[in-house]
Each structure stands twice: as structure tokens, then as C-alpha cells.
Length: 625
Picture (spheres, one colour):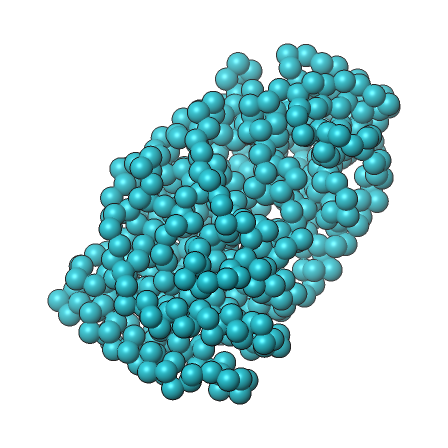
């Protein structure tokens, strides 16, 4: 989603009807563009796969380059930032010498976040296995180069640049390690005997040859610079343990419908965006990837939006995963402790409230899209829909078997007390649209959801609550939306009271139970969104937002429409749209925030929790679950 703070002063079509060949072309476009050593650009957004350790994540391009990694947390400054600039800003590439003559294919090991990239060329083939072990100490990125057949000369280039590409480290050699130090950060690269490493042009380079059956491990460990030597690990043992950890978790998936592969990959991706020490869930692993190429819609998503994380938890709960819901609920209690009127839309992964936004003028931005922003100023917005998302998730957690603790009940009552007093106020809404606050229909519908779920919880638990007042609130909000949110001439629910613009978020009128799906107003609204927000066979969020530049189709909204079409009985149409939207994923099944049907490219931060949540929920609806 458009993260955000559109009132910040600086925040100034062919469909993908056929899946791209997952093997990729013999010479991937990104490899050709990146081949110019003096101007090495990032790959396309869809060229990137994700590996992570449940505390941070790295993006690995098709050409074997790690172009984004923040350590030690999702929201820490990066040590690789070529994604937002070029190789000078940090990257780590492992690839055959003559990469342009090799065909690249890749996939994840089943049920894991272990990435396997295969390079097949005239003299042999090789596999690079990338993964980050789930942490019991310092974070590590491990890369195993395995010979499959023939003989393949390999080359490596490690260019560490801490502080978002700004700090050039001092590098020294010590006992099988190359050690890079800059300020509070240090990184230790361990390579096996027989691999020649040397410094050149501000990078650590390596040259080696791999034959069938060889396995050459590279281990990069981060730790605070005041510590001693990095602890050595057995890369093969770490690979086995990491594979077992992910597959054990994935075995808990209870979805058994026809789209199991896509659903499981989405659930694994959502799990990968959860910060294990606290239970917070980030909206995406990246910052400042543009919603419009060359434009200014470049926001930092490495934080925990209550809305996004609530929706993520609902998808994980539907998938059969309760532990994450319990951890997130504990995070929620810590993060929003205090005055419910001081509720923020977004927090840090440990519940931090201050997320100061800065611009990184030394980074040119992805394909020249600037400014590059780190931090996020959306913390000061009023977004009333968040109350509905939070209460709905607490309701779903209780329905899934999590006990309703008194502390959680006290929090819910405080949230409802605030909502009772303020639901009639205008707000910035789901999309944080630039300009004055408005009476957004989606915010009102979610206020109704909060009241409805609070009543249900009170009735189910028998805990003390002003149930009569909550019922009255539910009725008042419902009547208000029907009186002011539906436009008879347009034949649809609109974005905000008094307006005539459409908004895909009004599809939640049916999904939340606000009205039954066979209500004529719901049916007309769904069809109006389908027809009037169409963008190359997919769905825009809305018709305008006041920012310069045009954005692509919003991936989550396309899944929402598929979900809504199924609800109103148009199943064949729903399945066709769902299948088409799933195919927007890249070769390893990852979805970003948006899709440009004109250039057939992914846009926005990636992988995007909102997109994968919508996929999971729509798949469950289509499966009749």
C-alpha cells in the first residue's frame, strides 16, 4: 500500500496472461544491463528472490548478486544497497566467469526459504545455494557453490558499504577471514582453503574453479565491531538445520486447495517478514522502491503497520499458524501501551514510536527514482480503519483457540472507548491519500467491524463490557455508511462521503459481513470496481490521489476483486482473475506492491506482505474454506 504520509512536504497495458519461462532467457536482461562494470545497475524488481533469518532479509538477483541486506534488523542501515544505486553502494556477486553464456534457473527448496540458483553453460553447470540460518547468535548469509557437472570457473565480488552505501570499511585479513570494519559494524567473510581472495577496486574478489561434486562455502557474518573473531560454523550442518526448520514450519499449512504451491509460498514469505524476537511484522523487506519509475513515490516499508500486520496475522491464522498470532498479540500490547488516542498507524519492529524520515541524497534511487527515503513520517496520521483491523484480528485469534487474556481484553475496551468518541471524524484513510482528511467509507466500515467483533467477543467470553453501547455503535455506523457512503446515481459505494470516486477498498463491504454478498448494492459495487478501476486487466486502488505521476495496478486489489467476484457468485470470472494475478509473481513466486501492465514490470517494495495476504485470503475463498 502507499506507505505513506502523502501530506509530507517532499512527497510531492498489456496483461501478463502467460507466466514467463521460469528458467529465464539464456542471457537475462538484468545480466546484460549489469554487465557494464562502470555503471552496474540493479536488476528488475522481479529479478529478486528473498532469503532471510526471521530478523532481516537479503535480496538476491538472477545474476547472483546480493543487492540489499540490512543488518542486524530489517530496519537497520544496509551493508548492500546496490538495489538503490549501483555496485559502488554495496553488493556481493557469485557467478561463472562468462555469465553471459550461461542459462540461469532458480527455485526454492520445497517448503523453505533456501534459494537454489543453477547456471548451465558450455563447459558445465553449477548451483549456488543461498540461505540465512535462523538465528541463535550473529546473523549469517551463507552461499554454497556446488559443481553439478563439467568444470566452471567462478568469480566473486564482495563490496561491503555500511550505512546505506555511505561508509567504506577498513578491510584486513586474519586467519581464513576477510574482516571489514566501519564504526559500529563489522563483517567477517570466511572462505575455504584453495579459494584465492584479494582486494581490488575497493572490493574483495575471489577466483576459483568448481568441478562436479565440489562444494565451496562462503560465510558472511555480521557482528558489532567491538567484538572478537566471528564464531565459525559448519555450512552444511547449517543448511540441513535451516531446511528442517522451514519444512517443519511449512508442514503446519492446512490449505489443501488447488493453489497450494502459491499459498504456501505466500505464507512462507509472510513468515519471513516477521521479526522473531518481538513478533512484529514488517510490510516489506525493502525501502524506497518506486511505485512509479522515476517518480517520488518511494517509501520505506521496513516497519510494522498495524493494518498490514493485522491482515498478515489473519492470513497466517487461516493457514493454520497460531504461534505467530500469539507473538504478534504480545507485540501489540507492548507497542500500543498507554493512551489509545495515541495509537499510531506504524511502529518499529520492537514497538518504537519515533521513525524519523530522512532522505539519502548520496543514493540515486532505483532506476533514478528519487528521493530515496529511510524512516517514515506516517506515524502522525489518523487512520480509523486500523481499529477495526486490530479488533478483527483479536477476534480471529480467539476463534482460532488463543485464550482471551484480561490484559488483551482491557486493551480492546480501551480501543473501543476511543472509537466510540471519534468514529465520526474524518481521517487519512487506508491509502493515506494526500490532502485534507475525509470521511472515508472504508474507515467507517472498519469502525463497524470493530464494534461487531467486540460484541461477538463479549458474548462469547462473558467478560465485562458495555455490550449495549457497542451494539448501538454498530447500528449507528451501519446506518451512517448506508446513508452517506452509497451513491445511487453511480450505483456503488464511493471512496468518501460526498464524493463520486471509486476505491477498491469498498470491496470490504461484503468481505467483512457489513452487507450480505447478494445485496444488490454489493453486487453493483463489485462490478463497478471491475469496470471502472480496470488497468490492463488488473485493478487500480482508486481514481486519483493528488500526487504527480501515474502508478500501476495494485496487486492486492486485484486479489480483492477476485475474492469479491467469488462472493457474489461469479466464480469462473473470479478464478480467471485470480490465476492471472498469481502469474504476476516472479519465477520464485514473489509479489511486489504493484504491476505496470504497460511495461509488464513489478513496481514498489518487495516482497509485499499486503499482496501475499490478499492471495492467501482469496485462495481460501475460492476453495470454499
